[in-house]
Length: 266
Image (cartoon, rainbow, N blue to C red; front, side, top):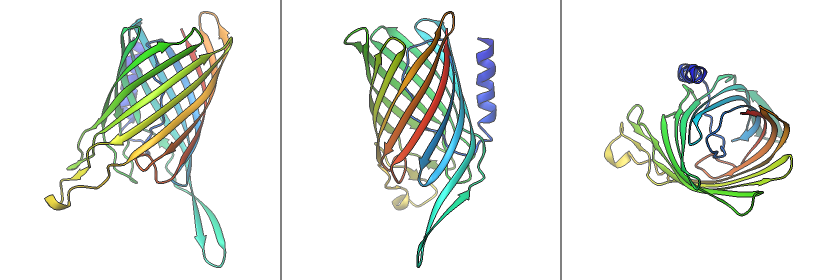
């Protein structure tokens, strides 16, 4: 546990110097000791970017775990189109490399069919957009159709802490997740719908102008595979996942993300 708390302190310290928000889709898991390393390539709002991510989870009990995640943005390049006599494509380096936002949380599995997550996302000091601390409680249910096919579905909510007299609207979402197990392969699917249920308010303005008219929604999908390499004391896997997002809650245009992963479980 000592190494986890050191990792948690690191998450809290570096979260005040990152440069862009970080919000990929995450698979819900049962409590387990694990460490993961991930890298991705993302296209979002005409910006190509890459993150390096480290994740650590420790489960002192089979029904309970604590986890933390940090990421590092290596580059962000914006693609710009100029239309005059001809279309000219330009690529602009946004110079936003650096430590990114962090996540800490707990998992609790009181029954084999019922799980609870509580996530705290720590924002970045990004100059390009406002960022807020958020608390996200989740409840999910697990079921199995066979030893090879397992499903998980649940409800999540996200509550934002006000910043500089700006109250970002709370959100709610539903998700469906499945895992199909083969001898050395695991195939994952995750479908999630998110909706902002309350308009954001800028309390620095007069009452009639405070509402931001931003009750947006988003539909997001993630799929991929894990390949087992070793299964001794330490189980080692390699993964490849693709994520698609559509909706103004996440981005102005459809977004794409390709993720490469390695994990060790014990």
